[in-house]
Every structure is written in structure tokens, then in C-alpha cells.
Image (cartoon, rainbow, N blue to C red; front, top):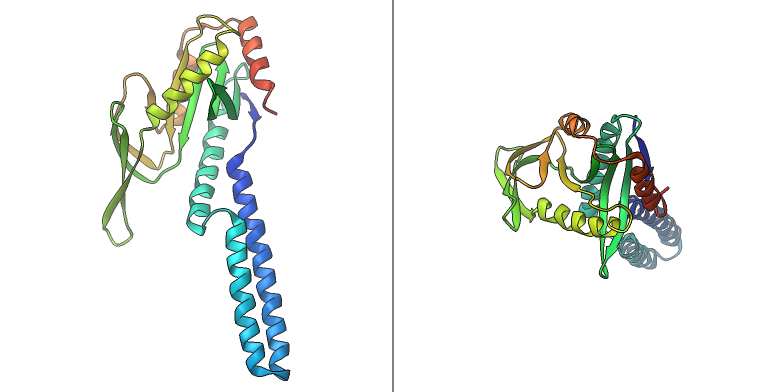
Length: 244
């Protein structure tokens, strides 16, 4: 098994904050209703008014402090679970591979967050993970790709999203420049790994695009041994400065 080094998980932090604030908000609303109920015995009208005001106030307060909407929470939770599932499957690579997750890098004042970076004797792979349900259409030359979904009633709908091969291409460029002083002439390969629930109708020559993590693992293992042990040690040292 490959060793997984977990970096700072911003999605996890966002989700945890949402849950904590919603729990606080629920408790405050319950206490507000208790106060309003007690006031009903003394001043019924006052109790009703106070109850409504407190419930509305704490509901809005909870939503503002949560940082994200309920829909954003659902999407982020689905994405986080998808990333964890794909990472655990990717970690079935041999023990001479390391996987670094949620890596933050900077190049020329611009930052990138890399979902996963695989380091091993066959190369360096920047893996952008996408957890989606439906069919994806796209070409690496296009700015946006299209996700098509079928609803429960059979209706077809969809949405555009930024071309992930361009996204990972930016990550590859910035990481390659960061690693240049560490190891010379190092090839960094970009990968877009979709969940198995995603059907793909895409074309890409430069970037690997797949929904089969087993196929990706086999591909990585079958590549020529191009990175020497001493260089792997230097690369791992670079990443471990900022990951757990």
C-alpha cells in the first residue's frame, strides 16, 4: 500500500463549521421556543411575538455563520466523500509510492490547491478528483465541459463547469516550476480522475482523463522507472514540509 500524507482539508473545515453552526442554531431555536412557551402563560401576544423574533433571528444568525448554504454543504460533502473514496483506492499502489493530498503550492504569487500528488519511481502525477453523477462531454481545447444528468422523472438537464484538464494543467505547470530546483528534467503528468458514477464522452491527448481508478493505478505502475531513489527522497522532502 502507498503511504498517504494528508494535507490541510479546507472542504472538511467548511463542512465541520456548517454542521457546528447549524447545531448551535437548532439549540438556540429550541430555547427560544421554550421561552416563548413560558411567556404564553403570562402574556400570550408577547410570547408569540418574542418567539417569532427569536426564531427568525437565530435562524438567520446560524445561516450567516455557517458560511455556506445547505445546497453548497450537500455538494461539498459529496465531493469530500468522493475524494476520500478515490484516494483510498489509489492508495492500493505499491509501498514505494507516496500520495500527498490537499497540497497548496504557489508560483509567481498565484496559489493552487492540488487534490492529490502521486510520487513514485515511475513519475509524478497530479491528480484532480471529480465526484459527479451523470455523463460528461468535453474536449481538452474547450473552456468549459458539460455535465448531463437525468432526473427522477426522466427529464434531462445539465450544467457547464470549467474544463478540468485546463485546471490540472495549471497545477502541473506551477508544481513543475516549484520542483525544478529540487530535481532537474522532471516530467509531471496531469490526471483527471472522475468517480465511477460518471460516464465520460471526452477527448484529451495531453492529460489523462479516466473514471477507472484501477486502470489509473495499472497505468502508473507500468510506466518506465524514470525517477531515481535519491530524487524521490528530495521530492518527498519538498512535499513533507507542508503536509502531515
